[in-house]
Length: 163
Image (cartoon, rainbow, N blue to C red; front, side):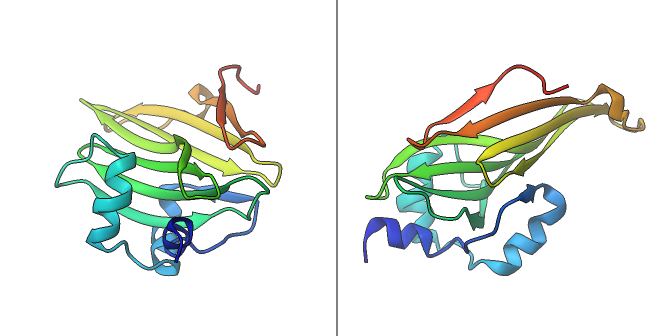
């Protein structure tokens, strides 16, 4: 079994568009086999240099196959930070690019949260907002961003808002 096949095994293919949010984490977890420790040690820790013994990983899904690359998404849980990580891989299973596309970050009493929607054209629409702990969320303060997966597998981030 090739390196790419070993990686893709843990990620069920999904249809696009798809919403990426912690609200759906249990659905992703139900549809995928958990990562064995050997996979975490040999693959994920190569991608996640800052992971420690308390970091958790959950496989989410893979996008429909592209001509030159494959794309997988997994959840990474660390202390006060939870990210959905998108990874693009070449045909040999080597990392092309890796980006957080949705997250929850707790910093003192500020909670920052972002949710993503991956479209069939591989545009990733992201809505990000924040709230002070205990206060009601104000959606009018949210920002919209976009990322795109290029035909090469590079994931680029557009800083311009979509408003």
